[in-house]
Length: 335
Image 1: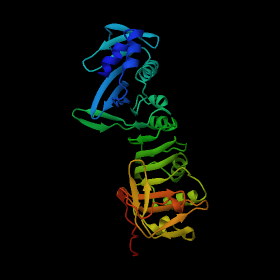
Image 2: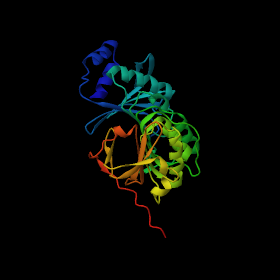
Image 3: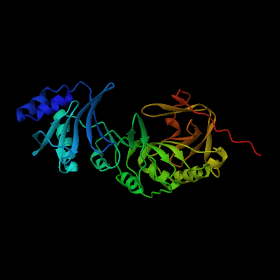
Image 4: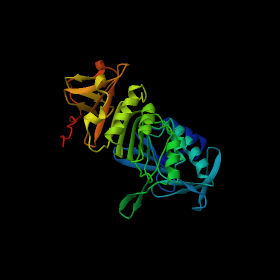
């Protein structure tokens, strides 16, 4: 149905105005852009239903049957069974024109961008306007899907784009021995599937601009986490409020080594509230106190180590119930 509205809007200025006036904005469709193949695709989604609006192709890929004018540009147009295709000599120019046109037509901005090479340039358009951005290089292979590894250049392109969006995911494999020393975008939540490349310096940099951080794979040790907490104590990584990270041989004594004089005990349970769930820390934990009043607690998460940070002792939701019940860190017995 949205495809029909889009095509109808191209027929004339009057048709365009009609769609703008009478399009039902209460249908609660969410617009997303998928750039995980060779062509950018605009889709509308609602309650398990996906409606593909338009596909952007190079003009050399297919001969158009007729022309339409959009954004002051006349381009070949093809209607398919499930959507329509617009053919451009320059897909980057074409995408931006169609993007602006659809946003104005339906009075919507995309809810999400799902992007992979060779379309990483779409990240620049997603900046500051999209709720959810994911670098997800997955390609189909028969009835199955497989991950498509990124090159070092592609990883750097995605990282240096410094996209600002509430949710950002790196669902991709990084090259072996990959390293990055730059800054990160501003995110309420950042998810990194392959964090084997992350260092203590990366954690500090992420913590300067990101609130909730989830790193599924990591080579960082408890000694590294100890180094990070000592940097945090010096009022660095001030945006960070939660860190969930894969970490082997978790040992509380190592994590808080040299910090014992800056710790107090919280007798009750502590709950850290996120937008979609909450983390419940067990009672009787020792927490790390910073000079400005902020506190940090550590516990066991199903993935590995979880560290949460509260602005002060009074902001702890003490003795309430959280979605995820974390476990205390049980140090391995002395040999």
